[in-house]
Image (cartoon, rainbow, N blue to C red; front, side, top):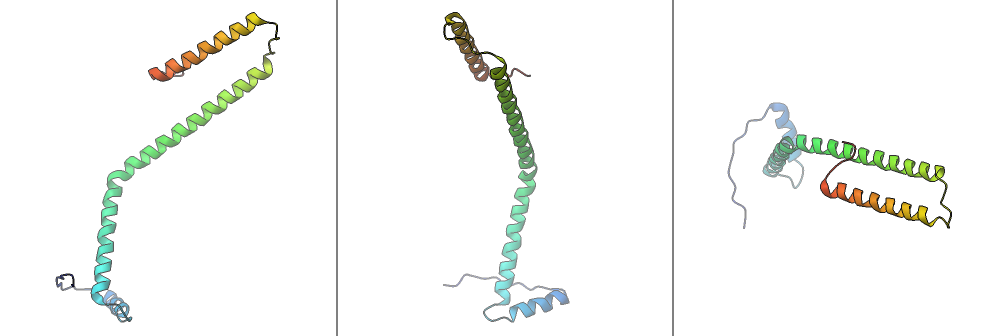
Length: 128
């Protein structure tokens, strides 16, 4: 069963008309199929253009913001890594017999982990 079609009358500039006739002269191609394909492609392009106009600016802003977040995360990670490396190089390890010093270290570490957890859970930032 053939699809129902509607007839249109078009006026084309001469140069375009010559190119159109040459394209339609190829075997297996009809003027109607060329125009239908071209019109469908143009309409789809317009729809994409409308979507890009509507959301393009917002997506660009989100991309820039995400890039800044990624950069800030890399800076934070590098800063922490360098600080830890420095601390490990400067601080002498405690002797095995220094139980009081090791207990203080464990307590300080537990406090540190607790405070990090509280800050993340509460949405607080230390540097702001």
